[in-house]
Image (cartoon, rainbow, N blue to C red; front, top):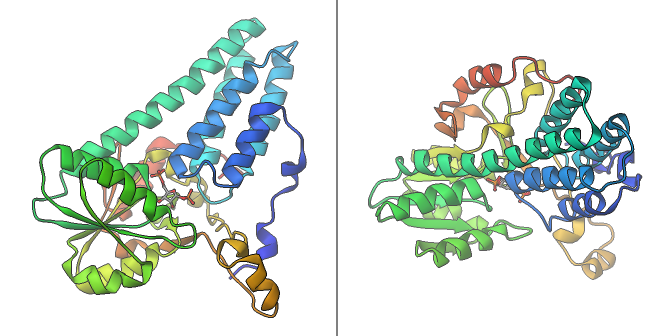
Length: 331
Ligand code: RI2
């Protein structure tokens, strides 16, 4: 396991940026804004606000500032590839717009449109995933989910709205208990949901027909990087022959894994696991808090995207289609 030191914030985190970029960076880092899709949209909205801040006197200056802002936002959390993919989407378009020439005003307007377009297509992708995924849920099914994923709640909600009768088990998802969000959201939408401790998954898995989780990143070999505990759940699902589905927008595909790069796993503060006083009283105890793990493709049946449903082995072809030239050095 890599040492915690490797996961310290990169130096760009100390570069001061105006208002929205700084606060968005901090909110993503502190997980006040969380979930791979949400952090991607939040970063893009911050870039748009930065463009609109009225502090630039030339398109060159605008692009330079935007690039620095994008780099800062990308450094907020290392694992969810949706974040660099979204920021790079805006930066690549901004570069193209800048090179094309035009007034500062028209350049800002064009970049704003790119940002709005990303947010709209991200939201639409989640809805599309919902309708594709809902077809995989049958009357009488028991579906287990882990953590809190908008893509997953979209699928479950679409199935419920289609009149299907099924039961959901949501894990608590220690240490930050995002499973409570899932349980609360689904219950409010009228679904039949039970919240269970993470450690109870094997007790209930025999009842479970399918597991449905989100993704923070998907590698070229079809491996899925998602909230810590996902890979253990996949193993248990494999044992009982429950199907294992992943719901993820295509901007969670990690194109640089085609070039052999690995997805960096975020390790967070020990104080998410134990109180400060406890650790002070037990200072010889090392607390490790990896935020994500990797589920190998052998344990995954299907990956549900807005472009269609793929077996994990087919993801590399989708990746090649979407990212003909993966951006070297970016995630
Ligand atoms: P959506 C979350 O990460 C979870 O791991 C979740 O499965 C994934 O993002 C995808 O979420 P975190 O931000 O984009 O809670 O589907 O660490 O909402």
